[in-house]
Length: 503
Ligand SMILES: Cc1ncc(COP(=O)(O)O)c(C=O)c1O
Image (cartoon, rainbow, N blue to C red; front, top):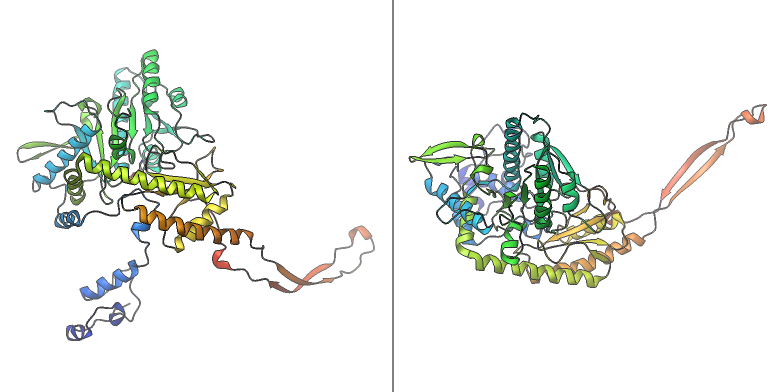
């Protein structure tokens, strides 16, 4: 498989670059090509193929940032060749990550005083942050159990069945049993009462979510903290809380500053947040913050000595890019508290308009709450599972990506559609989306009412040889002479199915 290589002279005379002018043979996909090609051709081939991806700005499935200011894009490009792991060579980048950790810790009401440094680390996203927080809880629990001379081989974690898939990954990768509080009709987050009932002496922590992935709802972490404190007092255990604030961590401090969900609650020992969600940075950055040093067992920390100073590190990987950490600091510096608050208020306002528009359409139940992550989760009033999947596919033809998914066990009869309202999904976009939604619904209804395809068979019955005994006589053979299928429009008959792992 060889690509046609065009000589430089010819290249110049071709003017604008188009891959078809260079490539006549198939593009190698799964094996390294034998020969080199020009940079223009390589660019054009890949660029053209990527045009078939969806547009990130129309991806309403994702919480992850799809727009940043050009000044920040510039900083990202400037830092694209810096390996974050080279702290010795890039001490300012390391300093910037430490500034971000401290800014976030103070935003989450960490008990550190003004002169103290907060304990935390930048990660690739909330998933890595959760693995690290989970590991710290496991190790802390094991150390305590060993000191008490008790077995420490069966740790468990208590969560709601609405947890994101990364918690199941943590449980499987690090051998921790996951005990899930079941959801029930009309209640799609962890019930703190039931969670505390499930806690036993082997529970390394209760993981609560500030902003459920499925519906955006905040769990009642204050109530959880109260109930767990009482149980700890009664039993003499010391079960802590981790808050998965992947989405809500950059919403609650700005929109609901009075809501107690963070380090103001004594049992909250660590919190993760996705910088790349409402932290307003492109995909690739998360954060985990611990309440204080004692909550992160020393043996999990590796110490790197850079420029004579000790740089503690606790991550799953070594090398990674620096751009996203720099981009996070840009957003903090650029927006400040005021700017973040405005962005979040605007998102909430757009979510409200979207919600009202969907209510007015009349065929949806709104599942998400008004307080929480700016998103609208909704289901069909008729409860037909296939309607949601079909609608999702029809909307895709307009360019919009709206996921349809079934809720976890015990409420799996519910199929939900979800639109996340990010900063770049402003009012004008919401209105356009609603107008497309109305067209899509008309199409959906015509599909649902379309007659089921009819198949006409012409058959002949061939009598078998008669047996003497009536009871033993075989039935006549059916021979199909022809079959005719009445045509239906296949383009709108789309199959449903379960979508897993919404993020
Ligand atoms: C509640 C929650 N936790 C964790 C995650 C995983 O986050 P990340 O994509 O940053 O790894 C998500 C992703 O949507 C989430 O919603």
